[in-house]
Image 1: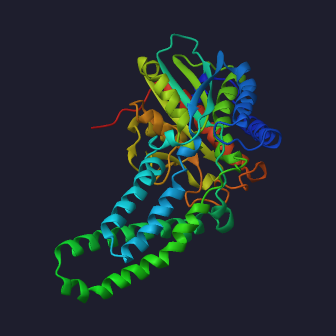
Image 2: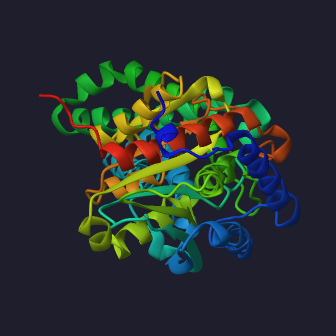
Image 3: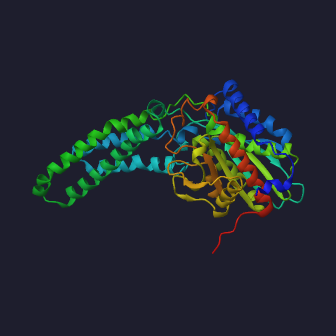
Length: 420
């Protein structure tokens, strides 16, 4: 049985899904793509603020500074280091080649996989914003739930557009990384052989080094193609990723308000963050600035990110390229709410990438991610195909229904307790 039914009122799920599709279409058609820290990103947030004002007690837009190209700007450097190392090896300088490989991997791991702001200072500054709406309960505020989606859209990934998400991963992205790994191993082996082996041993093993060099050469085109992995100027419509997430939060608050439902003890906070596609910069900025406030009373964060592929609807167990474990209670809160609505949500992991929930979990605030997206990924992922025509209203409706139930379930029961 749905906990939300105990509050009474007529919760209009489909009407709010239709409203969400209409507003998303309006933003895409009249504001357009929203690169992180751009005027268009702010215009979209101001547009959504007008939807939030009538259904919340307070709205505000906070600014923060970012370096948007820091997140992916390392790619040319990494490619140059990896490709050059192949040839440096051939000219009997394996130690130099090994150092070059290590330098290639450092920003790849720290920026792209772990979302550290490692090389941001090398790139120009921009100003981005977070939109926040707050709705107080009818009684004393004893706990808080934060629903966060991101308003910006990614720079286009041309290889995904050309090949489709899965083929791009298998034919370009994976081989490029494999090539760099092979070159690193090659450099490491050559360094130790050259250091400790006799000359005749090195000569007898020359066929081995020639073979490794040839293998390294084979992967060079894949590594070079990685330079074209992302456009540096053109961003995408971002209808599903992630205006859908923003409007799941807005639609949830709107559905509750229209039904005349107030929470008994739970403050609801909806955040439409900026610059998620630049490495969770908006969520990181907000979590840092408001950490103490978010910890003053029990708070749970639900990251809402991309609702299109209903067959893949899931709760995220691990995040931040698989390195971060989400809170047990937060995960089961969403899973249990979905079960009340007739959905059996699986636990999934984000093995490459992250969602806004990770920024809060890193600061010790119970969080989880919630999405309905083909993890392959789909051909619309970070391409111009992520447009309003490609939306699936049924996925948006299901997400609003589950999120409404999540909020009500949390208000009534708090976070589930892990059994010993």
